[in-house]
Image (cartoon, rainbow, N blue to C red):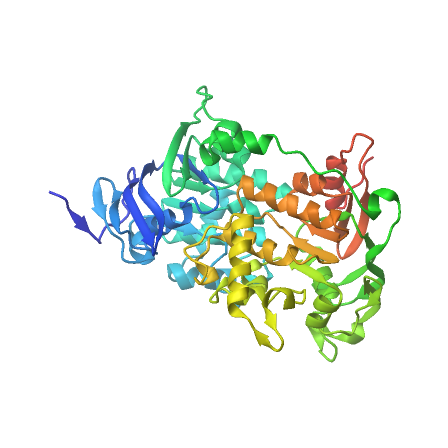
Amino acid sequence: MRRTTNKVTAAAGKLRIEARGLTKSFGQLLANDDVTFHVETGEILGLVGENGAGKSTCMNMLFGHVAPDRGFVVVNGEEIRFRSPREAIAAGIGMVHQHFLLAPALSALEHLELVAGGGIRERAMAHMKDLGFDVDLAARVEELPVGKQQQLEILKVICQGARVIILDEPTAVLTPVEVQPFLRCLERLRDSGHAVILISHKLDEVLQVCGRVVVMRGGRVTGEFDNSPGRGAASVDSLAAAMMGEDVLRKEASRSRAARTGDFMTGEFIPALVIDDYRRVAGRDALDLSLVVNRGEIVGIAGVEGNGQDALFRAILGLFPAGATGFGARHKESGRIAISGRDVRGLRPRDIRRAARVALLPFDRRDEGLLLDEGPATNLLLSGVDPRSTGWTGWLLDWEKLRRHARDLFVKYGVSSSGIDAAVRLLSGGNQQKFLVARELEQNPDLVLAAHPTRGVDLRAARNIHDALFAARDRGAGVLLVSSDLDELCRLSDRVVVMLRGRIAREFTPATDGGFDIAGIGLAMTGGVRS
């Protein structure tokens, strides 16, 4: 006889969690279809699949955020339907989301006490020593670097008693130098008796640390690979084939980068962006630099996060307003910023984006790029390029025309959704990013500001986004690209500049074979020089 309960408490012994026949629909969209797999303490399980494959929905059922239509979570043989994350935590399951759930105004210790109770300091310090973490517990959460905030999230769920930890795209927010130490941390978690479910699109990282890998496609489990030492059954190619299908993979492999065209290749350098001796004295957002991005080229910005990349985008977009004090004081700025020959200092952000035709892929797509509770048609109106071609009839909005345009973009960019009128927050993170790219790049901008354009998206979507950036460049746009993925940055860029403490530390151009000095770029990011 089937037994269900909602009161399961994490025990000290071996813990085995199973997804058994989990099925969930949202309207006409079948998000998960009879998903079954397991994980137990002492192992790292990889969970991979394209955006929209059903990974997030499955994890949300495992963590009590979403109730399944059919199926159960099974904890040590006992079938459960969690009614909330609180019940999942009590059963020993914790989740670190891609977008952190932290209280920015509290200190790190206060935040731990808020979620795990008082008297937590000694226990937290012991966990940090075991994991190799170094979080300043006295610092305010908002002052911690992103990598330290992630450590705090993991520390939080461990202090709550989690023995199975779900990590959603954890290395997407890390700099290249932080990735390997983080992967070693996962191994320490495994060896200390935890189980880890690692959701990632970075297949090489999955293969480094995961003993088994479960692949999802179209809401179903399409393969499970044994990656234990000596088996050798899993590879990037075999995982990609299971994720995308053999036919699709062959088509992807046959793609070639489009030939370079336009002003950049003919030597006729026409600036899309000119930053001339721009200085801003304002603490962590201080800038002191000059930079030119020509039409028809991609200029990559490399740098450890927090070295002025975000402040640079804000300066270009006029987001340090006149008349402010402290953080945004205009009197602390000097120099010139021009887009397509027009000096934009002093203009409002909306006027800069439209008059100078600026497309923006922001650092945080959820808070800075999308209205999550609105549908795609409304979100089209946020573009920096005049939307009259797709949505205006005189002074009135033609909503049906906007909806048709949104539908066309969904088809062209492969955005999976439960319906064209559904709120954008119901899209997976990767599909939100694909829609954002489509909205911004399909309107023929003069300048593209792109921050981490493929963060959290799958292999095929990343290639499509790369192609869209190449296409914008080849149409004559200048592209200023920030990415924490050095391989991506060097693959896309015609030049790479390194930002360090708000300044341009070095500039790199490709060698005769077309490749960049990746080791030299990495060294410059830390302020080092070759002896």
